[in-house]
Image (cartoon, rainbow, N blue to C red; front, side, top):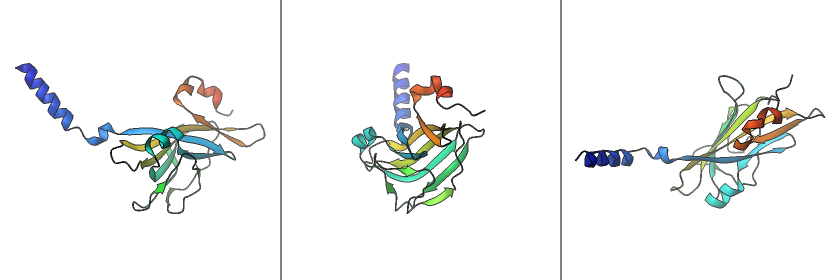
Length: 166
């Protein structure tokens, strides 16, 4: 008998879990255009889930405590922005229908940043609710700026990729 009660309790618990518990965050694509970061989704995500509709974007500086937002915008709920793998939402450039949340701050060489694109595919059964990526900025020998996308397998040598300037 105790086994049956445990099984019923477990079944009841699992059926009452909030749908957000099954949500996922997919990878964002971070690349560089003229030394500035550009954000989109990966080709893999687009092939798998189609074109998501973007409702907001937030860039945060992970190198400071507490973590600080350095740029953000949102779109009206009835006018989200379609985002493709070949799109480029360039850091600081506000899309036409978007409203600034936080004006863009200068990116600091040696700091690590995250970007979160709040959006989801058109398919309501897809649990994806956002796309996240990380990057750092370093100064080039010519005095320009270089954006370095950071993925999870780079954690071991991250200080070599984007060292903090002296």
